[in-house]
Image (cartoon, chains in turn green, red):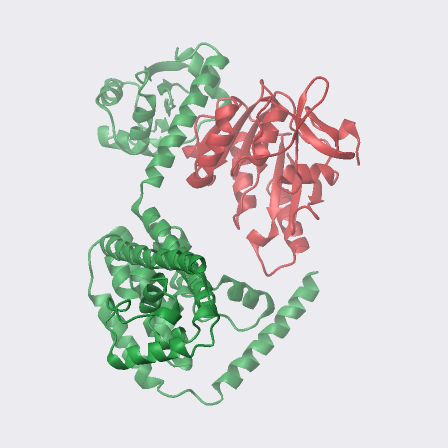
Length: 403
Length: 227
């Protein structure tokens, strides 16, 4: 009868079909975790290889192995034998540990395994946390949060400085210039040309600023108020700088890790897709129909539940190609964009080289849609509305019957 | 409802500010896992068990009887998450018991190990996908019961395959049914029925099915015995 080979955390055990230990190899105490995890990854240490090769008389055709990667290792060591993968009944492990001399009592096994599993889990967490797409996820999330924070604070300062000088907002449309102005902490009643020398305002602009400063509807303000507004404004200017750095960082990282995805979807939209799906590998495994509506879950599940019209696009709406197109083309463009994103993500995840073909074929299809569907199809809306009404009715009926 | 005989070992009703609350005897006195209130009685310290955070507590409050977890039992816990419920199960099984906790997400496993496992020597953490039984750490003791709380459409199948591998006939499975994870378009009740039929046709007898309302929406807990 065939023997069984068992990989455990403490070492490798060979038993016969009566569950008697024939041979065992204890991993070197202290390095069990590295030896075990290497074996699990298909890498074999010299000691273990020696042990496995020395047991040729015990390891014959149709021997059973309890681990897939050890099975592969064995097939490489013994190319002429045919081993079989089979899990081992857990209740037999305890006596085997004792028989092979690895441990003497359950107490010992318990302590060893608890320590082992904590360390092994920590190592697994370390491996996963070191992945570069996690950096992308945190990066894009901080970008979105920075944007949110900057917008909120900008609106607040507009309001606050607007109490004193409301006309300025319309004079300085560029928010960078506006907040630089506010950060100077100037009282509008005493602005001089010298105060504004760091700006390159035209004569006309300067005149407009001075005249509206004199005739402003704003109230008076003291220097304490001005200084706090100026500090807040400086803070915003800094945050905008930080935001640009984060954006730059994401662009670089995306071009390195997912060159095809960045080319098709753009670095930020690509990064948001990675963040939403939980990683590049996970994105690569999604069907394009899912990618198309990632980020529109609320609308999608509403549609599945009630039979209302499904969403055409989720995150990919932010892509120029989609949101700058006429409404009636967006669904088609979103569909073809999502399919190319799916292909690009798969190339990035599994091959890692840059492919130009996808970009070209997307452009081709984009132009085709623009030409073929230049104007909206008449009555089409009516038709889909009817279709969905019918779907909704059948769903309601189904629900009535099932409950 | 408040019948002490139906409670598992180390679980009791404790009076806090005039209200009876479910609590477990703290296995690590002085240690509060997720900010729960610690209440000292004359002999023991108790950790209040919040039914809004733990589905097992919710099902006990909603009347689940004869929970198979006792002092000293060995449990395979699938989907340990950050360890709210496992910490209370660890209180229940005590020093002779053992919990094998499987969790797939390394992010929540990080919190689980830091906040729960490092204080409790009766938990063995396993970061693995519960689909792949062979990636588990050696489970060297006979498993007495399986608790499964996984948000996957095929959660029942995962529970069944784990039971087939580790449970013997007559042992119990506690399965949390998350109807929203299985199918959002069907009514929760029809999903509970569907999953119970699946269990029955896979060699289980259903003992009880408890809806977790009002503590969790669209969730139920099923206790089943393997034939």
